[in-house]
Structure formats: structure tokens, C-alpha cells
Length: 317
Image (tube, rainbow, N blue to C red; front, side, top):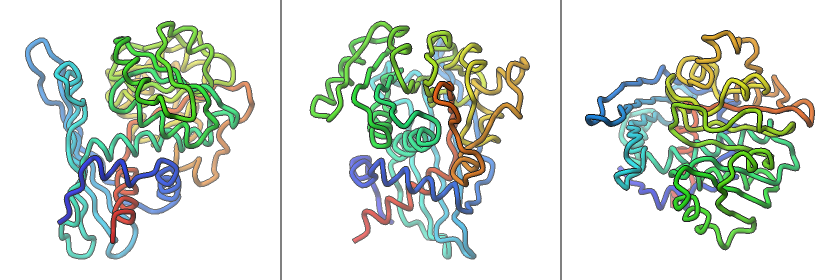
């Protein structure tokens, strides 16, 4: 069995190639059993953690591969100097069940999550989108920058975080990029100025005011993965054309979707499409230039398996 560390994952998975692999996966036939979602009690006065178990296997009899991701999300980890997401991805031979590779889970998750957002953006953001705003400074933030800039002509990236020093440190890591990256402190103005607003936080309260959104903006909500998490407020939801990665996952787990559904602000038919429908041409995505589009992802094992299969192709001798 091969052990694949984070550096190898990041070096092998090119964002543009991964977006293409995810597009093909959502057009294909992958078996994805319901993922296990368990709450782990946190420390006193701390935040509860989450254990996710996500299996999937590719089409075929037998399939080429079976993949199982086991990850934990500890929202208090950044204060400990650790990433929120920890875990591993186990890839098995589909014929024999023999373990093929044990892959760094956080690296695979971050890279495929960002690629899914960029994939959605190819349908939902304006083709001339040039200004990207990242809200959040965790491990997903740099991946979202890499992915979005690989699929849209981004010339300017703004980074906002509750900790200004973290935002500045993140921006400084991109000093050799072909686009300008800078930390900002005025979130309202940054939202108004942006073509794509990408949120990657574990917030339980909306992180920006939907009234700030300018017509034509695309909103990318990545961070919240539980019903009690929220990144966009009711104003943003009511102003936007809403899309999701998977209907089943988003309507069951994502607070940005489940809470508006519960109050009646959003209805199931008003969710215009998921990534299956977008990738298969069943929905065109953005309609009018002035539309505000909103994409909510909670993640799916399809993305992990597609990323792992591409990874093995790239690192095989």
C-alpha cells in the first residue's frame, strides 16, 4: 500500500485538471452510499467536533476502485495552531479490496472542495469575472484562490478574515502570483466590489450582508456543513438564483439551505440545479449578466474518489 502525503497531493493535483476530472465524475456513474455524520463532544466551553465517513466506488462490475474517507472537523483547532480538518482517505482495489493507497485526507479534501467550487463557477459566475473575494483564512482559502484563478480571468484577489494578521499572512504567500492578492478590512466595500465572493468559514452566523451584493455577483459558500452553520443571510438567499453541489446533501446538512427551507424563504423547486444537472447540460447555469448566483456545497464522496483516481494516475510510474 502506498502512503501519499499532503505535499504529494498538492503537487500532483493541478486545479484545472481536477476541475475537469470532477466534471467527468458528475457526468458519470458513481455509487455514493449515504455518508455517516457523527457529532463528537468538544472540550468544556469549546465547540463540538464532527466525524465524517464517506464511501464511494466507481462504475463497473467490479469497480476499478472503492474509496473511503474518514475525517474529523474540529472548529477550535485553528486556535491550537492546527487545521480544522484531519483524517485520511483509503483507496481500495475494486476487485480484491486490497488497500492501494492511504492518502492525506485534509489535502485531498481541500483541493477537491476548491475544485468543486471552481467547477460550479464555470457555470455560474460571469465569464469576465476579475475580482475574487475570499472570506476566511483557514486551509481552504489558498486552495480556493488557486482553483478560482484557474477557471476565471482573475486579476485581483481580496482576503478578509476576523483576524487581520492571518489575512495579511495569507495574502503575502501569493507575492509571485500573476494576480494581485491583498488583505482588506472593509468587508462591505469588498463584497460590493467583487465579482465572486467565496466564503470558507465555520461560522454559525451569516458573515456578510446580502444587501451588499452587486448585480452580477457569484456567491460561493463552502464552509458550512451542518444545519446550525450559516454563511449567507436571508437577504442573500432571497436575492440569488440558488444552486447546490448535491440536492440530497445540501437540503439535509447545509444550514444555508435547510434554515431558509424551514422558514419558507426558500422552496425546494427554487433550487435551480445541482452539479449533476449542470455538468450534464440539464441546466445552463447563469442566465442573465445581472443575476446574482449562489452555490452551496457540503461535499460529496464523488469528488473525493475522482480526486484520488486522478492522483493515482498522476503519481504512477
